[in-house]
Amino acid sequence: MRQPEKHILVIFGASGDLTYRKLVPSVFDLFTQKLLPENFGILGLGRTELSDDQFREKMKEGIEKFAGTINTKQDMVEEFLSKLFYYAFNTKEEKEYPDFKKHLESLNNKLKTENNYIFYLATPPSMYPLVPKFLANNQLNDESNGFKRLIVEKPFGYDLESARSLNHDLQNQFREEQIYRIDHYLGKETVQNLLVTRFSNGIFEPLWNRNFIDHVEITSAEDIGVGDRGGYYEDSGALRDMVQNHLMLLASLVAMEPPALIKDESIRNEIVKVMQSLRPIPEEKVPEFVIRGQYIGSEIRGKKQKGYREEKGVNPKSRTETFVAMKFFIDNWRWAGVPFYIRTGKSLPTRVTEIVIHFRPTPHHLFHGDKDIMKQKNQLVIRIQPDEGILLKFGMKLPGAGFNVQDVNMDFHYSELNDTYLPSAYERLLLDCMLGDATLYSRADAVEAAWEFVDPILKAWKNQPCIKVHGYPAGTWGPDVSDQLIEGEQTWRYPCKNLVGDGEYCEL
Image (cartoon, rainbow, N blue to C red; front, side, top):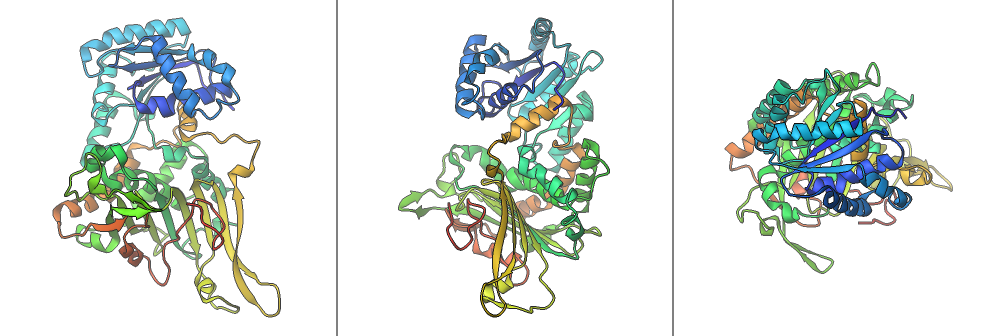
């Protein structure tokens, strides 16, 4: 694999949880696989006063807990930690940036990284417009003497207006090619494998259209509630937290046309075309196409589960949705008339993310079988997490006289590749940014197109208090009314933690 150019990764908000749990452990995993340049360093920034040694000690603890390669590469920890540095200053104060710049340039001279910097904003969203502005005012966006890249975490905006404003602010300071809007879902191997499954196999792509596919279903479920994130979640909700970014991007990868090249601009162009083809949902029709729910208290395996309104930091009369189910259409030649169904929620039975392609049934049933089985359509299940893999469901003849049919599974699991290391999402995305590959990062026009689709739903919920927030007991698959979105006799696929084993056992 191509190795990145020498550089310094500068992390704003380095004393926070994201750096401790995800960023530094992921960079350590890259280091152990010899995917980093020899001249490399991490500079952590924050208001918390820490020495280099204190920062290294804290990050060592995070590496030992969360790095994927720690068990086999323990001897490399100290060598990696020597590349970590820390600088404390108030990132909200522009007057402190000249001193920060001097410190960064001094470290650059020490490490011989040729003025190549990646700035990672692991900060609250309120800092997203400020930090790039202060960097630019100190010429730390200037690529005449080395590359400068900016990684922005989600949430990217609160609605269409704020997303446009943020894009405008960022693009005033950095060129679009320098901006990397991160969505960790796109860093998952199984998401990327969706492109390979579609475009490298002659058996799938000819069927990947309205003539052969009945509907597409995408589920992203969490088995836990909001926990201590109630304060954040009150201002977000499931639609902003999951649908606008993660699930719309997954739907776009399912629906996109073949790119001219496997290059970032070609792939991102096709994603934007899908976003621009989404059929708008008018405010007055939102209740027909979107169901929202909120988990209520229940008892699971003898243990009482809190309802959302009982969680810390949540308004006792909150109408914030913890569950969203939606039906929508993509108006283009490939997908005209094919419904897409997406759902996401907290406190559901299990943690699972998967895409299900439901193929059209045969036009005439020649064979006999269980009535429920005969109603089923062939399905291709692409499991994002956990038990990552692919499952194809189709009919087979039961042994014996006659032509009785039973549904069977043909599956592949990533866990079967015992000698293959499965990188984490942040590991892959960080390496791509270091290489200057923006394929798996969101572009400004795609972000705005997704918000343009979601905005009328948010406005309808705000302007029409009569639209119901359906309660569902914690540990169930959301409000029963979400089944009414699915056309015909079909219903949602109710997945288990294990990819296969339908009717045999279900691991929750």
